[in-house]
Amino acid sequence: MQKPLLFAISLLFTLTAGAQLLPKDELKANPSLSASNYAAYQGPKKALTRAPKGKKPFYISHYGRHGSRYQINQKEYTYPLNMLQMGDARGKLTPLGKDVLRRVAMLEAESRDRLGELTPLGAQQHKDIARRMYERFPEVFAGNACIEAKSTVVIRCILSMENALQELLLHNPKLQISHDASNHDMYYMNHQDRELTHAASPPHTRSLLSDYCSRHRRWKRLVYSLFNDSAYVQSSAVNGEQLTNYLFKLANNVQNTEIRHKMTLDDLFTDEERLENWRMENAFWFLGYSHTPLNGGTQPFIQSTLLHKIIEQADSCIRLPHPGATLRFGHETIVLPLAVLMGINGYDMRLTDLEQLEEKGWVNYRVFPMAANIQLVYYRSSPADNDVLVKVLLNEDEATLPVETDCAPYYHWRDVREFLLKKLASYGGPTTPWP
Image 1 (spheres, rainbow, N blue to C red):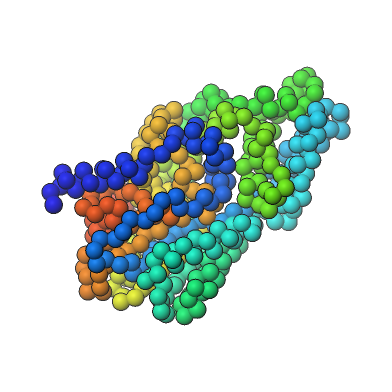
Image 2: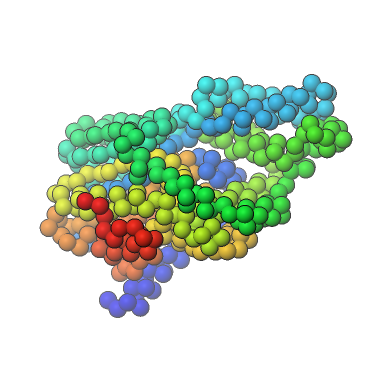
């Protein structure tokens, strides 16, 4: 097939897959998405495309974020709680302010001694993802298939892994499972590059984000509705911007805990305020992890080691008659740059205008909600078949890669491998996976 036709087929799939609502409409329809990385997992939205004739799934390579959790930082609860308690003690709260104080106190009590821990919803998310993985690709998990699972050493990730593995064993007790969480594997499971991270926030970039946020920040209406004395709001006792930021985070995270069945904080924000608060978060994550020249353009390479490991393990497993699956459990700060590094769904874009993010499709909640995951599903007709295909799923929906193909959403693994290795080499890393 000629290259122009290959490109046309690939472009058509990209346009079809990318046809989504703009965030302002999407958030109005589903306000919970404004939570960015606090958004609870939504699950797949589309049916899978039938594989080319004769091809069957035989191996899955996966990296997933832990499921829903409590807030990590105690201050995220105590800062708004203390400010509201102080206002209440001085008789400065409105009836709404008193009610918000009551609700924030409930949230703080629920989270006590559970900071950063997996919630029951987070456990269920990974059971559901594992069940769908088994149901969608039964050939991968047939018989005594080998499942190698790794987690970072953080307990919410370990428990996410264990819930997923328990679900797989319920469907097939014959699975040969190995699972581990060790500092030995953190060099690729949760690699942190201080040099790259520092380079992402030069003074001009911080100034750019500050200017952007100053145009989109909305806090006055809410704060003045909580306190009955405007002079008090303007005093040093109240930091309206900070209070709004913390209340927005708390409102976002209610959806991840069991208290969601009893209360909400969503009523505190208008559609416009929710959108503008999300925009600031979206810009923050873009500047921290995208390919934008504003941060040096190299931030996603922080996950070079992980991507090399994925390629290396895929090359090894492809040689086996029944390799099974490689499952990895970690964090959103890995999923996002990995998706950018691979060019999934066009997230490798190199924009420099923060006001164009939504129009161009940089929308953070589509990549890294709680339990976010990237799955590479490999297909072949038999162990002797050298034309291995691969399909990429982002949060269980078929995704695109910037690679030519004649069978979208499937790609020839040799082409994907070549593309990824060339990109890794462009940053100065090794040109082939490590032995």
